[in-house]
Amino acid sequence: MSCSARMDNGPYHDSYQAIFLMEVTGNSAKAYRKNSQKVSEVLTGTIANNSLSLDGFGHRLDMSDTGWQLKFSGEFSADVSVFAGKGTMLLDAQPVRTCDLVLTRN
Image 1: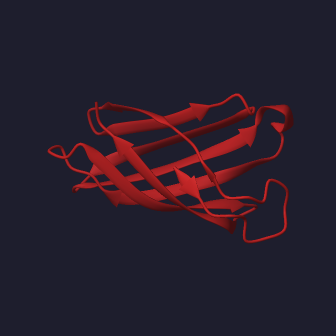
Image 2: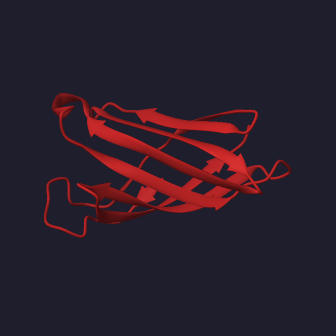
């Protein structure tokens, strides 16, 4: 995942990239990450009609009472090995970053 710099002047303003793991079981998908910088993000969704929508939450582990919401969607079918989706990071229901998410099947 790569996300733009924040649209507001909040903390952790710079753009960033992150690596997620993804599990697919039937038509359900889960993508998640937890890194050494103390950030956790989890996305879940459903594959239907050759598309995947993922929604989830993230937070800093040292500040778990404040977090953000993530929403992604894109094309995804059984015969492709890559999901490429566009999404948004929201804070208090307001968009603060635009993001691209690319997931590769192993």
